[in-house]
Amino acid sequence: MMLREEEKEEVVVVCRPLDQSDIIRDSSREANEKGVIDNKANQLTSENVSKNGDHREEEGERIKSNPSKWDGHLTEDNRRTELLLNVRQRRCSEFPGVPAGQGSDLETERKRRKEQMQRMKHDDDDDDDEDGVDLTTADAKMVCDVVSRMEDTEPYSAELLSSMMRLWSDSGLQECFSRAREYQLNDSAQYYLDSLDRIGATDYQPTEQDILRTRVKTTGIVETHFTFKNLHFRLFDVGGQRSERKKWIHCFEDVTAIIFCVALSGYDQVLHEDETTNRMHESLKLFDSICNNKWFDDTSIILFLNKKDIFESKITKSPLSICFPEYSGPDTYEDGIAHIKSQYESKNKSTKKDVYSHVTCATDTNNIQFVFDAVTDVIIANNLRGCGLY
Image 1 (cartoon, helix red, strand yellow):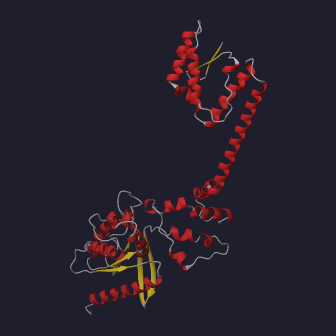
Image 2 (tube, helix red, strand yellow):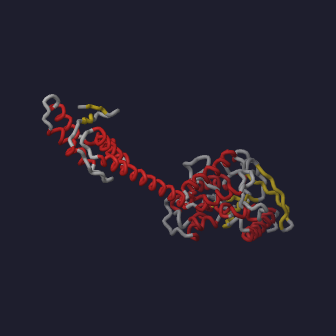
């Protein structure tokens, strides 16, 4: 009799010389492990051995009542079959009376099982290649490496361009992009990613739209001079972020007009600097403070409700009630614009000052041409009124 205790387990496996009738000859690859456990337990409990009978009976009941510990070794199908084959082969080689062909049959079964597992692994690898899993991972790593280096002037290599195009066409990435409002993603991202093949060309030259859709954060005060309809304009572009306002709010006591730009697309987004504050709520507060500020009592306010194209595509998927919980109207382009416009115009507490509102798309040159015509007329009229000529 030989006793062997398995490592890191409490199960004791008891082996003894068996006669030929006791040997399990079933060499089928799908062994019933519960049957093996029960047979082993029954053999142990039924043995009447004077010296170790009590121990065997106790151990047999232990295995039978708690097969989960034994089963812990057999969680995977290939390990389970391998263990059974090892036990059978050991019995055939160590114990007398075993037919000579039994060991070779078991070896054949072992080889057949090994070949089957190799075929399954090969099929899995083929599936990975077909689904593009490994390829997508490699593409993502290449793009992330470039982004992490922040080398935005690095020329597109053919490999990088191909990786970006494959990633952009991936269904999982598209699903992620559909929730772009949660990731502070630039509104122009889709435009540029849809044009990767053109932008990545060796002879690429930026178009007018490519330039108009770029974005650079305004820091401080940027002054621009230009002439339109024989009028000389001095345009002061100021940063709208919270940290920028204290730099300019008091500087424009004698300006002719203020153009206040609102991103309509921001109604379902939060601030970069404060992810608990809705962008449009913050914009309304800023408009209120400017429109009713003592420095701008006699200044015309021109309201640009910008990015109407993005708002039109968003409103059907993202309800306006995200920004205005009290809104119960339909989520349509016209109704949404009307409600937002009324929210801004209602902030004007002055009876002697009008707010001139325009719905705009800054990347639509024809629309901006029309809007600037209207703005110019407003500025000229206000100047004439100030001189008593209007």
